[in-house]
Length: 191
Image (cartoon, rainbow, N blue to C red; front, side, top):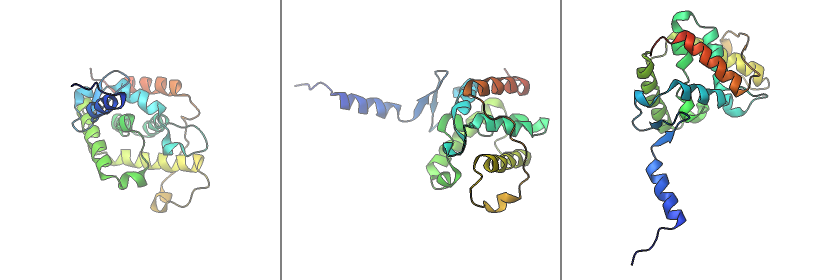
């Protein structure tokens, strides 16, 4: 006798089959275990980054990873802006994981690294972040921290970083997307 599947067993089957990928805004599927360059779409990155909160949302106002990206790009020399634009692009697919948590999740870090490599291949940028991009990211981190988390404790060696004005803030995700698209068109001369 055949027993029809229950709602719970059908859901389990669907979850088991979806286990390794997410479907993106553009309808593409990103396989977390084996991400490929052709699964990467700049529109998915732009939409994702414009909607993901910086600092896990634990700040005194709305501020997205997309706005952070715009600020990082704004302080970089021209030759490093494309990599600066993409430096957090993997977060469009997996979210902005707080660094202390990420350090304790080696599997997460490995998945992020795989996605980063697919992104770099897709847009023909080096996988090793240039020191100028790392510095700009650190400067923005501390500038954002000072602005959005003024009561936070000392962050040690990072306290020595320069500070700059956090220009791109107070924007809705639609405004952030529009700015990101415009900057992308300026930076990327590929297909």
